[in-house]
Amino acid sequence: MKAVYGDESTSYDTVVRWKTNFQSGHMSLTDEPTAGRPSIKDNLAMVKKAEAVILDDRRSTMERVMAETGLSYGTVWRIIHKELHMNKVSAHWVPHLLTPLQKQTHYDFSQ
Image (cartoon, rainbow, N blue to C red):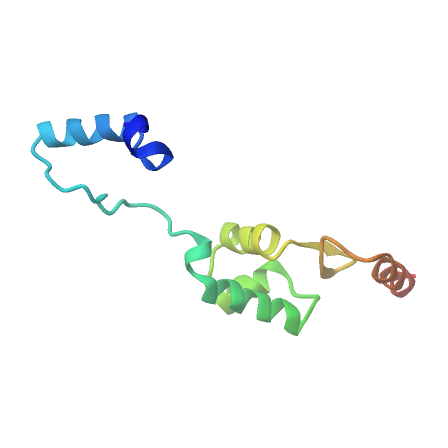
């Protein structure tokens, strides 16, 4: 298949899975819907809502963000740390990457 179709060809594992599905009577090549938790990236509205709560008051707690958005603790934590890339520093949510001037300003305020 690689010789005929090049790098755009279907992988061997996919062809074997299709063969198994066809033999069991499943004739569709589309994936069936699966159960499970939806991806955070699929729900950008919730990410934006959590970000708005935090930016409204940088001293927001996880509990406040949970109450305002209706999301679970784990989801709020994942949004703040993995999607928004923020950490809690001196009771404020701040981005991970600060410029030297921002670091100095933050240090001066905390003093």
